[in-house]
Image 1 (cartoon, one colour):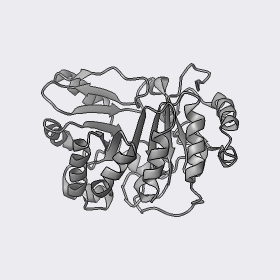
Image 2: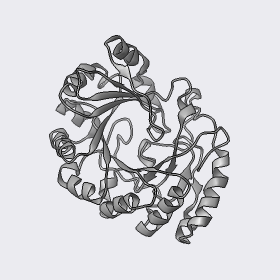
Image 3: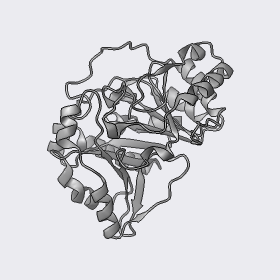
Length: 322
């Protein structure tokens, strides 16, 4: 089992397969994707070696991320490689939903269990203003298809004061009849969005207090769950999650490690550098990889230091898929 010096165990791998994204979200890539890094992304054989190395050390959940992972033509093969690895119980993916309506059946056939789709507004005009794409209707149709296929669906919405802070009631109305989990995510400061962050950061704590006041109950987190605090209400088909990285002890329950699309281990989303493990992947030696992972995990810190304004090497969230 992968365990750090603080006793935290890591069941959960977030695997980025590309840093390319075709959306222009104002909090992440407002000017669109810029090809300013090496695009020699992990190959399918390297991904198989990576997955086998992690699962032999207790990883049971893999989330495929980007950029936008559906931009890779071999995405179904990558999903299948993750789903077929011994010990993997759950294969998830985070996507902007651009290809959801057309490709969800292929992803499910390959072994996808759950899906997180980014929808920062249910107002089509605001959605287009945030993302640069008029795709909300097609994405919502794709979500209906995913639910019909038995996929567990979560919706990611980044809270932004000047854009969607007043939309909570719209989301609640939708959750009355829609069996998804809405995850409200506090805007995080990165290297490229300092001014935007200062203008738009909204704390999730007042929302949590209001939910509890309105009769929502808090769910107990599973060992392989992400960082959200989740809430349910008997009158709603959907649930609400809050991701509050600036809250006290946010990092105490950390259970995930990240691999970049070019084969670097990031011990934290906001680590000051990625640690190159690609030579072990290219040698196809999972034993060598396991030894390297155990050694490198000794450098994981207790917290991300976001509360002190530290953003590490993370210029924008598309680098590692959040």
